[in-house]
Length: 161
Image: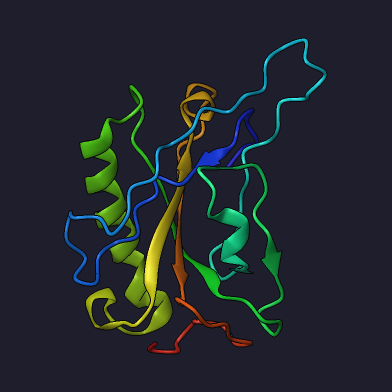
């Protein structure tokens, strides 16, 4: 992914336990406030690679400018399990996001974790382009698997959690 101005937004929906279109939570996707002339440089769209481990507390706000990756041998509660590109065109509406995230994030989950999402104890959260980064060409969606209420010092890869 080429760097673009903006940040990524959580569309705030952790996929439900059964991977349906219903969402467990709903946070608003926020607009990045980087007004010209305010002395704030436009940030690069955050990125991470599939397999990167992270602290979910660093990505649980409505907008994210940096992804707090850590070595998977350190305590963490999340991991990037899939990444995919959205289609070109207008910024997706809520229904389009919902469908794309559900399909895209569950698609790569089993390949990494080793068990189908519907059978896993892990939850999944997306990290998606904001409207501003979309307009600058960002289409990458990251799918983050995470533990609820606990941490681990191992990768989710092949864990069958």
